[in-house]
Image 1 (cartoon, rainbow, N blue to C red):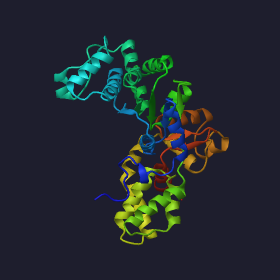
Image 2 (cartoon, rainbow, N blue to C red):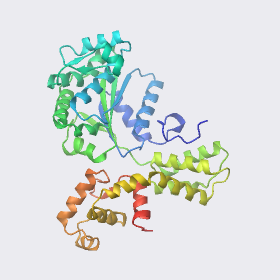
Image 3 (cartoon, helix red, strand yellow):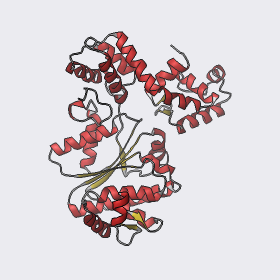
Image 4 (cartoon, one colour):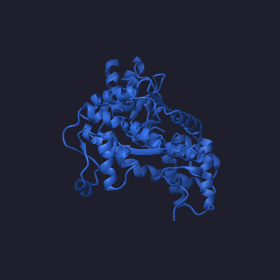
Length: 380
């Protein structure tokens, strides 16, 4: 039997909390066939937001097709293009005969081929008979629009972990071809949705290098309201006949910066540890359990950091969001402002910290921030 707190599934319907502003913006952009990018830290609700948007659109009578894929683990252009093309082609073809026909129709003269024996053994829809060239890539990038034109139904293509394209040897070249393909494409009923959980890498693509400039609109994820999130958690406890003081749950939500995945995981632990009234002791035990689960990963992160990088993190958790003042450099032994710049760049590449529009630093993972301050540095 499933408990009231699911933290390993996409949340929609009554389990979907907040995000009304983001939901409205996303719905309007997709209704206008605009390409979208959506990035925030891991497990912050990006996929749930997309699926809730699709549920709302279908309930309103909008007919569309959605292809979902991930670039995670794809380290070369062939893998990236094959995943994208395969996900889109599967929208209108299921049998080997239909798939073979779709490949002939939509990828004619390209390096991409379908082989029934290869498909039955590997499950891969496509294989490349030679290394993909620029024309092969363009044919894949325009595939959703062409399929949409033939079917008369909008095609939304969701690419998760889009920033992984940078890890390919020719990633920047592929991005340029992708950008040009979108810029030159005729207006039609299809759009791309780029999502990513590595904030700084996505910022590099869309803000620093400005790929897809004016062709992609960002939907910015806002922090959830702690009271709204706490109310949702309380309803879950009430299903099992359990009671907790609302202000205590609000305090936990704020401590974890309303991170929906951590909060639901925490609530599930509380639910398992209690039978009726949830005491302060139970809440503390649940937090210890949550930290214990993630602590090995956090220790691995700190072991990969230099002494200077740890000193800068210590300055950050002590309340310093800018590090170049002479006092901060001297207090935390950061050597020089030039060294501070190198440290900031290194921690951004590791996706440990990021910077807001004002230039203030913040730690991306709220549970890691709590752990490194309380358990690693022992700062109360």
